[in-house]
Length: 275
Image (cartoon, rainbow, N blue to C red):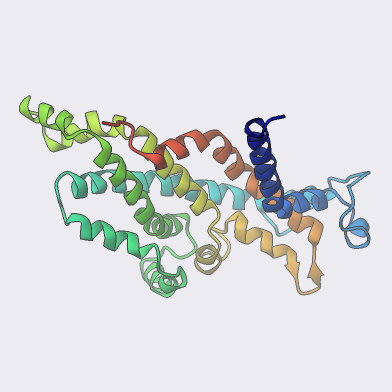
């Protein structure tokens, strides 16, 4: 076999090895979720044969632990954040790039907000949501997660808007189209890959949020990422139940990532129109 033919095989093996190493925690959680309690401690690296579904039953039906509600809260918060972030970031990116509202410095300032530690915003949001009565509500979490994800969404969409040929808009303006009409009827369809990429990233970041969810929610709006930690008790860690909760909580993000990866790649690489 020539070196030219060996190279793709070596790259594939290297990528597969990296993927295996990166996913060891998830694989371990999956195996542990099917093991009886005794096998978890005595044979932590063994294959669960025979397996058990008791841990999944504990997560879904345990008294005082409403995992379906946590799952519902995460879904509402994630999808609500995606919708609100998209509605704000699309016209904002268009206004900055095409209408020169604020200029490049405004986009840089917005992007810089994402570089600050999340803990920097916890106390202000906690106080604000408490004063307006949105603490421990899905609406409060949607507001918080929208604020956190707007910077990266605007950066992605601004790049997409910049890649749309200006000649298209100039021709539409000559025909009497307004800025709003151009945005809705022309820019938005052309930005579909960038919007999909921003929406997917927003969804994943929102679903995986832990810091704000554990501080801003207590019971009514608790999410799956925080709910899983409830199996870490003062009497010990229920490893089987924790693993089952982790597996259930990552199913939706994995599915979205698998089916949305082509939109993510194309949206991050460039805009939908190339000159």
